[in-house]
Picture: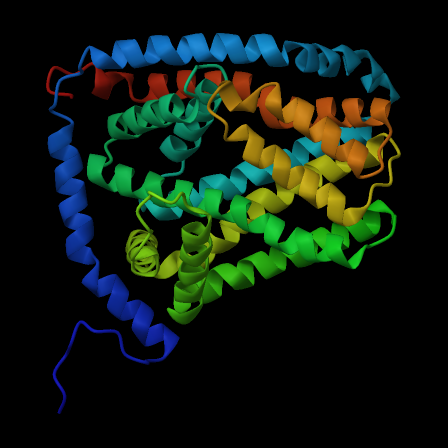
Length: 378
């Protein structure tokens, strides 16, 4: 009988995933221990300098994109043209998008209760939209709130890392499905077809994610392709990139170890988070009576999500407005409708979550005030 070997073998997907989960338990434990020890390291003064630099960069960036922000915000009076049910639909769709993110974090953090997950995500998300350095500051607040609720620091770090990797990987993968439709040259259609096309894209996104999580071959092929392209585009004196396929497999295994047997549920929540967000944009376009090209509408949404990751301004403020308006114009939406639809979409995806985050922070603080004020608390 052959002995167990760490080398990968052509086994069925279920068995291979189970083996990965078992082998990654020790790596997960080591990560949690190292994070808990790192908490004891005192804050260095260099952080203050970095924050000052980020604040300066943010101020300059906001100055450059301020006209596009004013142009978008100036369209708020035209919201009276919207029927009330469109506003209600956008609110419901954006709430569903946030609920998918809560479900993803609940699985990744292996939390027993929903309350600390929801309140910490709302507060961290709100802070990331107003503070320079955005995501890092919001993530730090969520991390602190989760530790106050009694979760292990190591579990929080590994869980939030897996969540960020999954959500950002989904954003990067979306254009892959939009480009073929653009190449085929789909003609102008109504929003019903845009919705159906988007639904097919997100189903394909789930299938691609499931294949990459269950099998080694596709992920190795993607790694080799990216590595080959990068090496061809590198500078003459730059070192060639090596070992990318193996690194992708290691990171995939860590994500599986964090998510556990509920990785399919987590993947569905990841796709649902962006699908409902995309539906919010479609609802805003429908409210102004626009009929954009379906593929270009999806590409505009993808561009907006990538621009929101730019750390120069909180939440990509200004960059998202300018980029989304421009892409919607390219998709066939008139200038006025593009600005109004962008404002309506950003109202529900950017501005309204801020007061919700403040409410979540207050509710979390009231519930865990006794524990955090204890002399023995961290």
